[in-house]
Image 1 (cartoon, helix red, strand yellow):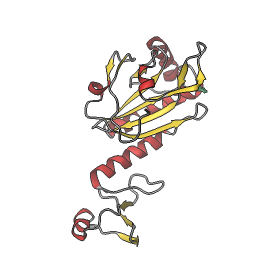
Image 2 (cartoon, rainbow, N blue to C red):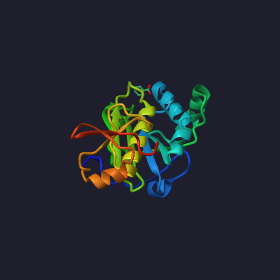
Image 3 (tube, rainbow, N blue to C red):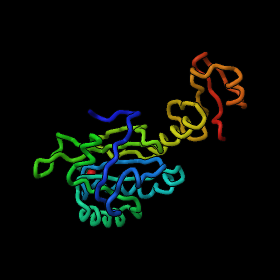
Image 4 (cartoon, helix red, strand yellow):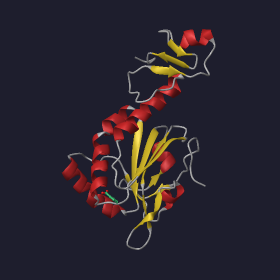
Length: 216
Ligand code: BEZ
C-alpha cells in the first residue's frame, strides 16, 4: 500500500552521513522534509542538494529538519558532498540517508521501476514528504528525474500548513506569507468569526471570504 496524505510516516533506522538515524528519535517534535534524489554525482541532483543547503536557515526558522536520501552508500555521499560544496557554494549541514538496501525508499514508495542502475535495481525518484510534529504526512510530491525541484515552493507550503494549523484559515492560489487568506466555509458562527478575525473579512461569495493574514 502506498503512503497517502494523513498517514503516519513510518519509522525506520538507516545509515546516513551523520551516522545511524532512528527517524522518530532524530525528528523529535520537529517538522521534517524528507526528500530523495535519483543518484549521487549527477548534475541536477548536485544543484538541488546545494539549493537545500543554502535554504537551511529558512527551514530552521520554521522548525523544520531536513533529511536527504538516495540508494548510494555513505562513502559515495561523503565524496559527492565535497563536489556540492565546491560547485554550489554551500555547506551541506543536513544528513543524507544511505539507503543502499532500499529499506526506506521501499517503505515510502520512492523507487522508480523505470529508472534502473547497472545492476538492474531501481533508483529513487525526486520525492518530497513534508511530515508534521505528530508524524503525519502533510505533502507528497514526485518530480521527474529531468526536472530540478523548486524548494521555495516547499517553504511556501510549510508556511501555509503551519498557518492553517494555528489559525484555522486556508490559503489561496499562489499565496505567500503576508498575503490575505481565506476563511474556510466550515466556520460560520458569527461570534467565533468576530473572535478569530478581529480585522474583519470581505465576503465575495458566502463560500469565499477573504481576511488579512491573522499573524501580520
Ligand atoms: C541528474 O541529477 O542530473 C539526473 C539524475 C538521474 C537521471 C537524470 C538526471
